[in-house]
Length: 265
Length: 265
Image (tube, rainbow over all chains, first blue to last red; front, side, top):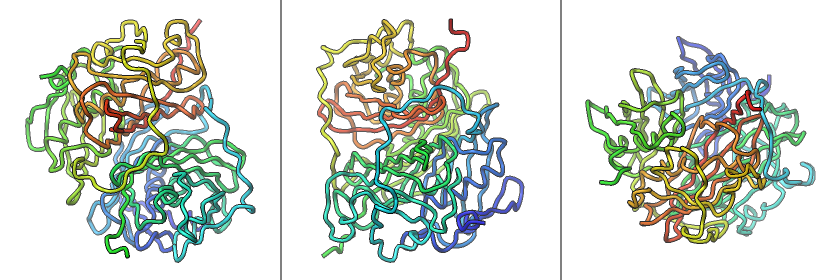
């Protein structure tokens, strides 16, 4: 069993009620990564619903989670032949921490036209890209990444003004991504606003939506994460994720706030 | 009182419980426009929460709404000094139709850095842009629009392959947009995939998230709505909205499905 499968495992503890465990290895500072927490909800939805794949999933992060047990109560909201809607309330010690709403489907049964506005960007392969020097970032023990450009932001605080990080990400134990892992990888890159402002403190996620399009093939995921509009401290981060065969497997958008420590020298 | 204010008005009918009325004038075919319905939820949230402006709002459309009364039950989910989180369950005749999750704030109190990756696009003024020939589209009685390009898609089914509609939108009674109107205008343009596939039937919204950045100034809104990835019938629509002073006031993303009638000749 992969590290990710173990660390997102849930058990059924009652009707529509599951319990997971937020484990060490996935934190940014002291707080478990939001994508990792969303993946635990993704497992509960998969266990409960007649459809097994996320199509679009939205998390609102109400309060920071901590390591330890997390209760996931799933409510079925409706649906039909091709789609099920549900919400998950994620609580720790009785406090509601994360609220998830989702549409699940069977991705292999999607049918209809396909088209993309542009070809997927061409990156140098994993081996030729650079790991950012994430000093003491526990999360990097699990979600290993490489950047096409921009590592100088972290090393020398040198900004390039692009608002964009491009690169690769994979499970550090070498296991292959599944469709639930996409929910985690959708929050696995550093904030691209760092390429504009430098690596400024903390960029907490208020809300994250992931649209899943296909089951990923084995191998690392190709990622482009962009911010286009920072408005008085509020920004969006838009992600695109392709698997190793070049297939688009997910897109993401989050709303986040830039928090710059006041006691900066 | 503007038409939009009248048609999104709510009354308090119980604790955390409001009632609105989905009115004629806002329908696409037989179904009230999803952005219009979201705006009714936006009014209920504004009436209930200590913070009065949407910061990010997500609707999952579980079942089509119809004209007539709609119940809005608001649940406070948490929050702090700058942000309140809540959900709204919107029901008609006891059936849950739309599920809204939101973070509200006071937009005028946002503080922090601002930046954009690119300048706002330059469009010809409203008067020089063309109204698309929306035959019998009731919604256009309320949300009047002009396109910079692409009206030939509707007139001659002539596609340009851009995946993009650019133009202007405003209340047809000439009233100025407020911050709640942004939730409606975020679903007011035709599906930009029409520029690729032609005006193909029906593109129902599964989920819509609107990020609001500022109170709009009086005047029409400048809109860019784009689809980049259509995957076996599933696509995203990303919108950007600037007010008449050039200020970015909102961005939006929705997940939608393209449904092409099978009985097409």
